[in-house]
Image 1: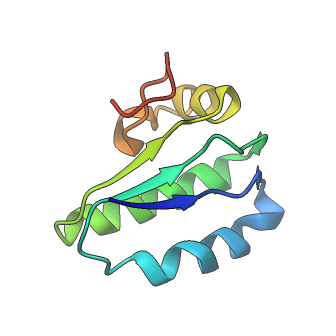
Image 2: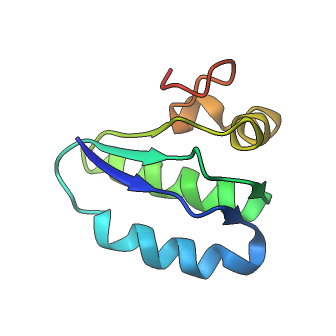
Length: 96
């Protein structure tokens, strides 16, 4: 499984950077783990981009999960109803 660390700031002003980081991995065939332990700030736009990336990879038959989610990331994903689609267990930050 390939691991890709998420940046610490997933705020709206950093969505372009996040997209640039994720885009090269859209077609990767193996499982991909987005490690979220460094995430300190989240906006809905960042979570929406993560959701779209996970969804688009799933449509191609590729598994993607968010692992080691920080408390902030897990809480934001739960509040926006995206925890399950991102594969985040909101109680532990581990994959669901």
